[in-house]
Length: 345
Image (cartoon, rainbow, N blue to C red; front, side, top):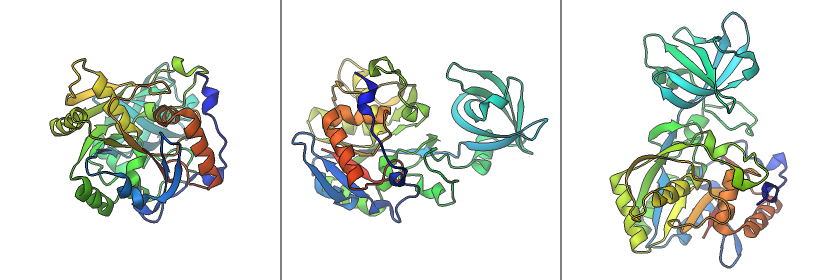
């Protein structure tokens, strides 16, 4: 299948640059995958689409301030570092900007307590930096001097409000460099109403890395390979999800990261049981994929030619999703991270 089928044009004015005044103040497009009907609702109406039998699953990952700024030692070049993956100890895979200025052996000074040395480069063009924290734990220093890693289509610097609004209210387990954006719409009041109606929710953890948002770069989508990302499911959550599967109760996934965790974990054991524990996934979901766990999905509007757009197209059907996106553009929905959302049922 050609990647070009998943392209669309979007005016920059529809890319949300800031969050809505309140978490739950977004608009919500409701897409009925069987009938093809499209509704325009407010996010607060989501409770109407959750049944008393539903199990609602959230991602409780926390975005850490992975964006660091330093100066190349021996010069004045300003270097931006995005921490993407811990390799071992204080050795990290990173994205550098501008990468061309940094060679193996070059050093970066971030402040008096933190320096780093470029030790290598991988086939994706990312570098490896060995950090040298002085008198403190590396991650403690990162939490102190790092900045919120907003996506590049948000054309402004991170503000103090982003430290709060670029986290979901479920954020507990640090490790992500991007937010699970569908969860950003929920506030305590909405969650309280969901608990009251369906009595149960549960959480999983997927640490969002570059694999979630790097663009698909092959003309034929079948040739694309996702990067590995780590996830974890507690024993309690695994039991709830397995029980819902066995009893054929609807499972509502809050976000594409939850979809990938649930579908990955289902397929990892031939017995059909839903195991708990820590694993990794490189599951690439595109049209033709057979869903075994997820019944409904809440998601934001995604970039053209992205793996996330392919995932929702697999869930609802390519033609229906393209129709929904054209409708969203016509109706001036707000797109991407801080934008509006889509409920697929």
